[in-house]
Image 1 (cartoon, rainbow, N blue to C red):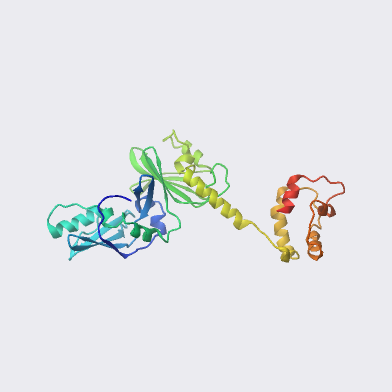
Image 2 (image 1 turned 60 degrees about the vertical axis):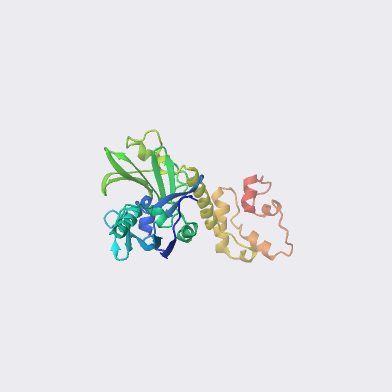
Length: 323
């Protein structure tokens, strides 16, 4: 945690996390990457309508985060003893505006410190109910922010899929622009300058999209989308495992007479592996197993009941049945 001076800060209202603001195309502005130690940088959200009180020079200053309806960026308002900063672009500007009105001096305070963003207890409270924090990726001078994650097995997307969203800021047509990169049915790239769309393209993979735009040629599209970043790949791997486990159909011996469940499992574990020559009455195996008094099932001996005589089993076939 920072060794800078800490103030007495009280969280008056926790505020809310907005899907559109904190995870949309302007997400980078709603999270503050804070350095807690030499190796740890964590984004802290500017929660909409959060309100904190900070005691400075014996006075209580209340700072609130609002939404600028025109830019969709956070704005800040500070009130103390009837003095009002109005909406300001930063917390620093808001607190110092109100402070100067009251004390008529030029003392300056850090907006982040006054909001308690270097206070571990407050930070913990602000992120306690958040399941996903956007990933900030530094690529040379470019900051990529991945604000949504989606998974797929789509070729060329490195595990990313529908719902994936990332942004970066760089120059396009000599204008500092916001690049919005997303994956749905196709991969998309939209470029904005001051809210005006300058460019739109769709293609099957991130690499193909970036091959046509003619800038940042030293990187491939997957890198610029943020997909191949180590942390993103770890998240995608875990989510893919979770998706597979959700789709995995299992049953116990109590279901061995339920032909609907057995058919689903057969489709999932046997038929999709393109194993040839399976007998059409394969389900009778389970009926017989259920009715037998002996609890031991021997592979591959038991399978000879439904395979041709002298059939040579491959390991993949036995593995499929055991699955």
